[in-house]
Length: 248
Image (cartoon, rainbow, N blue to C red):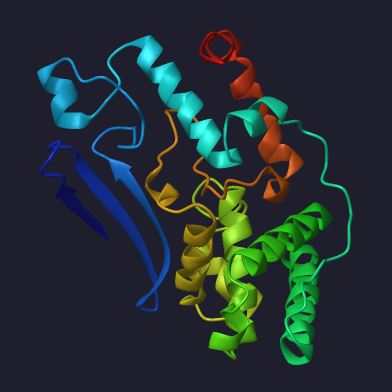
């Protein structure tokens, strides 16, 4: 399903792609009428640029890519420090949420560990999920008090980490419609996963990858990105070193 809208201030069309599984939202992404997002900073100098919001020069396209990289990892300093080393194994650190909620948080973390290996055969993804769960609890410590559905919390976390690393979707390891049966949770958990990501990186779901780049959901946190994901970003960053040095 696709719906198009036009920003009255800029006249730039946006297309929202919505994937439904059994009538429920399982995945979505937003694109401009071309391969750039409205969040890309680009001076508009031509009639075509005003209609599409597209960078019109190589320099503008490269500046747009820097912005994309910065939003993915949490800013310029994080981008410059980014490396492709595998995530280090550390146990889940759960804040004091009270006896009941602390036990639930640990149980959710343990289930995410299991699913990372059983579904994706990826022990590093288990580490990324722990870091993501810690970040979510720090950003919203009351989330467990608002819902008793720990299964959808697990599904939301796995979906969010998978989308942050490009593991789910047409170019990933599996399609969204195949993920939910493997997790044993309803596809509606994707909505909760989107809410988690929005809390970590508000508004960043509007960011669209530059041409040829993977479609990754921003978290603003490099510690939830797999080594393979960061290697792709490091390669693109290193191709922009001259621009980064000039704008530092």
